Image 1 (tube, rainbow, N blue to C red):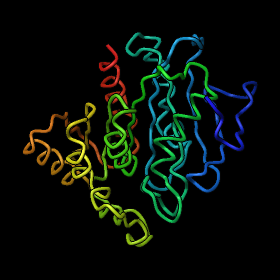
Image 2: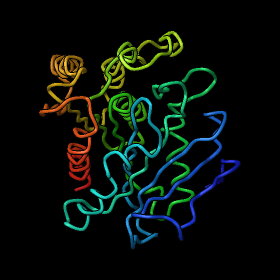
Image 3: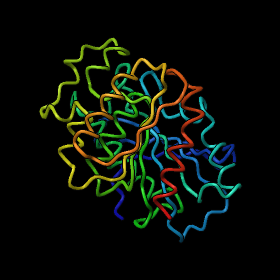
Image 4: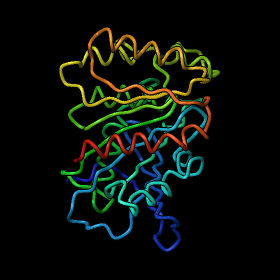
Length: 268
């Protein structure tokens, strides 16, 4: 594969802990640098394609959020050791660090969607042992990251084997619950790109398996129930679950494993 990134900085293995690696790369889609935190299980066979899960963070966060707010890498290692999961790499990119959150959309001459859908997988294939053309890719996220994961996973269905979201924003209008930026700043040429259901409908002939959940005390519970209702009415196959909890890290720490197990089933 031809190298497409002008500059790439990777953490020195001598100083890495808990199998976390940090990468900073100059991306044309971002018109600048982006960060990725990557969990690479120990003793991988570099010649054997390893599955990759891309996890997208929510507003206010960055590449470190999933690892240092939920310990997802520690959970994954334990689940691999307990044979609950196959070996898998977890890639946690930043959203591009625009405003309170980029929405993982294209705007302001930056394409935060293609940063995730194109740059991140290509970078991993070039620089992380075990990530090859044969690696299965999955995508998940929380809140704004759920919005990004569900949209991107469906829109780039040829790349992602399955998608999931936790406490997901389901329509761009819900971003105003979290960000100070005017929603006009996020305006998309195609209105379907602003809504998860419309994106799913647009690609309904080629959908990957879809899973999403939400806490029953979450401020986005009505939106997630509405998405479930619309998908059911449209006879679009999906899995939706509700659990006790609010829009908080304790919920995501507990339930990210549900997505990981969902993805593991796809690999069987």
